Image (cartoon, rainbow, N blue to C red; front, top):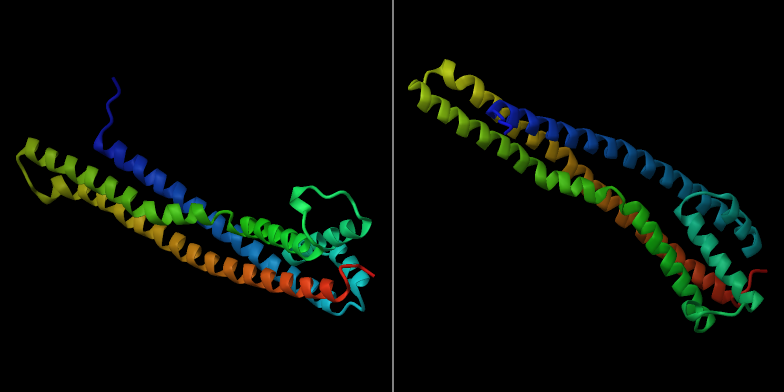
Length: 218
């Protein structure tokens, strides 16, 4: 039967918290770079789209551009093209032209939101569990330190300092891991809401342009 000492349990807890910290900072870097890139792509596409002379030129800019706004516009233009061809519609594409286009745009906005939300749940989970993981390591270490005191019959500093100090490190590391995870989650959630609001505003403008043109790209 395997036997784990107090030091082994606390050390394992510290390694778990270290893994949480690495995951947190990796997500912070990746999400930060992704949000910077998406902001740049959205600005470039928005400028090209609204400077276009007509829907055909705007459609070309959507095909050549990258980013959430470009993908949303491309989905809208694809729906308009399909309606122009008079292709047989399934239940997903049933209804009048405005309903079909609204459904297509809403679906694409949801897809983009799912992409933007990726990783945020991991940050939220780390931020909420890391302090308790650290607290577990601390309680376990102190509990066994008290057992060592009971066995040795001495409560001198040389007996308790090492085990209790090691145990308290777990709590400190748990808090140090949770703080950046919570801050990154809150910031990422706010940025996601702003991106989704931008997508919804663009979808509304695109719908109005399509209605003005009679749901035809020409």
